[in-house]
Every structure is written in C-alpha cells, then in structure tokens.
Amino acid sequence: RAVALALHLSGRQGRLRLYPALRLDLCATAGRTFHALSPRLGLNLALKEGTLHLKGLVGRAFRAPTLGERFFRPGGNPDLKPERGWTVEAGLYAQLRPFVLELTAFQTTLTDQIVWYPGFVAPGLQLWRPINVGRVRTRGLEASLRAEVPLAASLRLQSGLFYTFTRAEDRSNPSTRAYGHQLRYVPPHQLKAFLDVLAGPLTLGLDARRTGRRYLTTDETQALAPFTVLDAHLRLTQSVARTRLSFGLTVENLTDTAYEVVRFYPMPPRHVRVQLRIDLLP
Image (cartoon, rainbow, N blue to C red; front, top):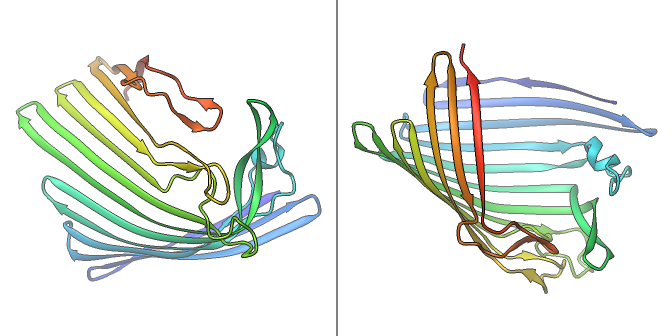
C-alpha cells in the first residue's frame, strides 16, 4: 500500500520566482513501513527578462521501488529498499536569437539507489535483477544549444546540440574495488544532435547520437566501445477536414553501425520504419 500527499506553491518578488514544494510518502509492504518527508525549493532569477535567467533547485529525494522492480518475473527483488537522498541543481538560460543556450550542473547523493544489473546465467544469456547500491554520488553537467532560422516564407531550419556528462560513483564501502568508480553501464559522455528542414507540411531531417564507453566491471577495467548512430527521417503532415494525417519514413542506423548498448545484446542494423498517425481534431 502506498499513499502520497504533495503541495506545490509558486511566488514572485520582482525578478525572482520561487517554487517551494513539500511531499509526504507512506509505503507499507510485507510488514515493513517506509515514510519520508521531502521538501524542495526551486528558483528562477531573471537577470534580463526572457533573455537571461539563473535557475536553481535543492530538495530531498525519495523513491519507493515499483511493482515491476519488486515482482517482475524473472528478476524481481521483493527485498528492495526505497531510495533516499538529496539533489542540487544550478543552471543558466540564455536566449540570443536565433540561439537558445542552457547549462545545468547537478549533484545527487542517494542511499540505497536501485540499479538493474545483469547476472550470468549461461553462455550468451543474462538475467537482469535490481539491487540496492548502498551509497551513490552522481555529479554532472547538461548543456544544450538550439536554433531556428527562417530561410524563406515557408522554409525553416531547426537544429540542436545536447551534451551530458555524468559521473555516477559507488561510495558505499572504501574497502571494495568498486569504491569511487563509475556505476556499470552508465556512460560518462553522451552527445546528441539534430538538423531539420521544414518546408510547409514537409520535414526532412537527420538525428545523431554519440554514446561513450560503458563500464562492464565495477572497477572500470572492462568497457563496451563507444558508438555513433545516425538516423534520417521524412515526415509529411496534412489536415483534411477535422483530421490530421501524419506519414513518417525513418531510416534508422543509416550507416549500418554494429554496436551494443548492453553486452551480448546487439542492436539492429540499418532498417526502415514506416509510421502513419491519424489525429481527430476537436
């Protein structure tokens, strides 16, 4: 049984906006009871309204294990404990037409973080199971740069670049080889980019993503190789009466890259995906 009560407020004083919040969680299962009171405070300071803003957030984190994490068969772990910890963020938002820039630095410290790990069952076969990692400290940086440029009356160019650096360290036990090292399968570096040309109802674009190495061992001695995947897409959207039709054609893994996100699980080679969507308008 689980119940939660949340209260969110917002206020403004001059150029400063504040977003306080408070959440109460109560969970009871198999004779165990968990409760947590999680305060949070967010802020947004307009150095120049609509153009330059400073952002920040500090709060307590709590997450009870889900039904899937506890009882999924095979692999569920009914003995999981809830995650508890604190998170802090600080960032900058800047709009310099046609560009929009966002930078965010973050740190989260969690006790009993729930992490899914693969376990060896047989050659080429793994069984994933969630466990609690005693103490995890995650630090990182997120950066994004977006732009939209009109080229003609009905022709626009949209683009974006997104980078994430994540350092998620096991800080549970200094006497183990895992102490101070990156969690398994968490890539320190991720880079994504897109480029779209919009001509009326037609969109033609490219998407690219670069994922850095993911460590297979807790002491960072073995890792999967980085990979880059490129996708191309074509979309046509047209309104007919009170219906909007959208037809999409996507070539995924355009360069036919051979890669694995998880060991022993090769991802699909070059392939085509066709999508037809029908929306009934009010």
